Length: 494
Image 1 (cartoon, rainbow, N blue to C red):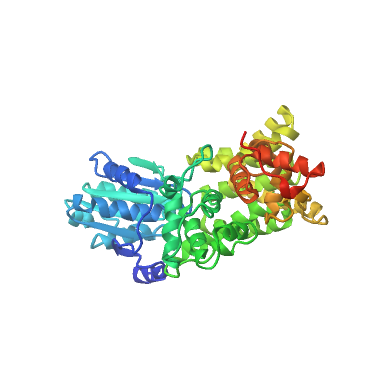
Image 2 (cartoon, rainbow, N blue to C red):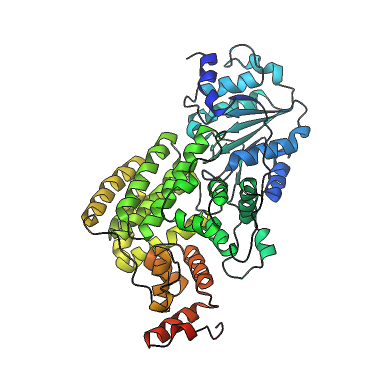
């Protein structure tokens, strides 16, 4: 394929090469991160810096913001090479040569003499599916001693001279303390939600009535900007609590988004939506729907060839297998994921660990130490294609075996709470609160993270108008003993 044709092929993601674009919306909650990355990028000993993080975390936007912040440090300017829609690694050096105005055969070091003494910044965006082209980056650095390269990728390039910077999710409100509205509104993920909600509804405000629901939204979405933005955009038509309820039942509130988003970001947003609904469906007992959602998201993850995204998908599938009582298979999958993460040097983020913990706890309660260790070790020896193939077979078999049974219905809510509008998952949590289970125990029962359990408890207390989880159990006990529900009110927090 000729160079002109190749460059034209990926024009759907915007210009493949060119100057840095300017954003039309503010970057929320990344000020300190931008400053930290910019400082590293201007150090003389750092010529290759890779921003590493999962899809949807905001690597591209962060990279562009950093590039604008440091561009005056590079007299020859800053240039962008978009790689999201490029599938041929051999095109990477061609695109780099073109943006740097290199003339002549690119495999001839003399052709690069034109940029040898020009201090410039090169941004290579979405490198993860082109890792075979990593050595060409080394060639550019060798031929152009005054060029600095900033890469965004879901995984490191693993080449000489590379420095890495992990991109974390946006900060979400703490689970352990009650925060006032002003403090909540200053939390990064909440700030992003408010900003995007105001864009579609100028009257939107964070209030005591909707604050709990907004907190639940950003926590459920793990602080991922690409997921928070479309959810906030629904504020034009739905209340925050309605968005929470809809997120538990449908992926539509996370799909779509701005039509000028690059196609790969729109596809990624849909993938995040499917995985989220899959997890929600699993926690509600609808394993068939969960399996359908995860199966759909796999197609896109395979197309992109994103090892970190595949690791996250496999961890979700381990949770599905465990919910189907396939505990040895689930342990095998987690063993494979641990090995995959170690080989790829992309450790588990804190929010990812919180998603895995309930699955690990569930497995440990059903397998003795020897069986757990054997299954885990078996998985650690498997590569990515074999473990994905195994998951597809085992999940289909496990879900089909349970397919005849209807999704688990939440137990009847105590009569005292019959008039309160609770989601199906909240009804489950109410019954477990009545049993005086802790957040950690609730999380294990429902195969959700303790953080998610905590947000459900907070929402339930608000809806019931009580101050503590113990009030829920007390009121339910009094109702069962025949007390007049209309005269009951919580006696205070404990």
